[in-house]
Length: 352
Image (cartoon, rainbow, N blue to C red; front, side, top):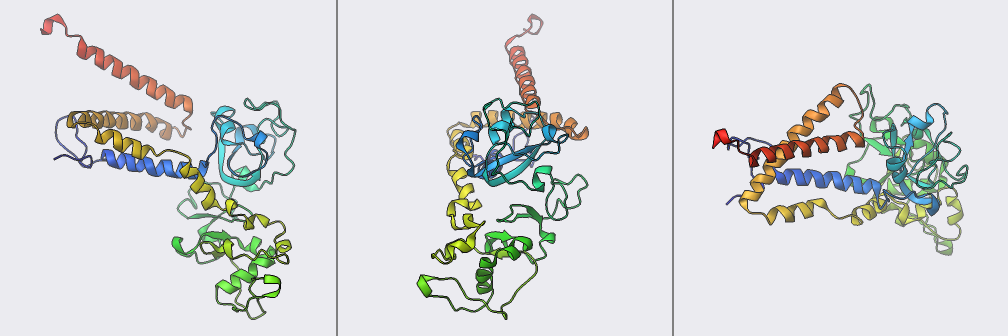
């Protein structure tokens, strides 16, 4: 009995090692899952400006609009799609407590198409060199056009939200399952309260202050220290003391006490807010008979081949693929299919 995990059937009736339909759906699910994690519950149609300073959202920097002015600004997902389509965008992943800048004074002679009525500046927004398309202490872009560090793992500091190459953290990176968040060395040195929890984690004293219910671990001059970034395990924030004496010590990093601020929490909300195309696709394929499955696989093979050929020219010319290019591809694909179907219906008299 045939299954959906068979090798792809080609036009001559033979088989070849290739991508199965289930592989395609699984790959699509992985891409979709990653996209949903980054985009969260972001609205692709409505600017987030009037929602105020959101706790965490996906952001972009438009280099087309800002390169000449040397301004730093961030725009929401909806504005990146509707106001800056076809522009050179830098994906910033997520930033906390940020309000969309699209169309304000940082954008000369440019008005937001979704929310034209905006204040001139968002005074509480914070910007770093990521908005210039640079990351890490090496100040390199990502992806790196020179390919110097693209193979290295990128890790985000939970405090300054900059991204660091693994080799530039000056630390041995634990296995992925052994840590949840990283704090770069520069930020760690500025946050004395966190040193209590790091020393305790790596084998420092086990004494805990119990005055007024405080659970902050004690530290001494003999505790182990290090000079690189520090990595904290899963659920480490839950152990941060929230007594009346400790809370003031989290000045400027009080967001660490908010579980909703965690990137994992943000990503999970994004995944849960969107329906899986993998599940929908598997249900649709499973409901088809053998003939319909073969037809779908054939159409997939055709689409894959045509799309690879179409995108190859963009790679060769080092051009960015725009939304308009994708629309043009599918329009041409539909036209070719229409002509093919018409030729199958019309049979010349000479062939009867």
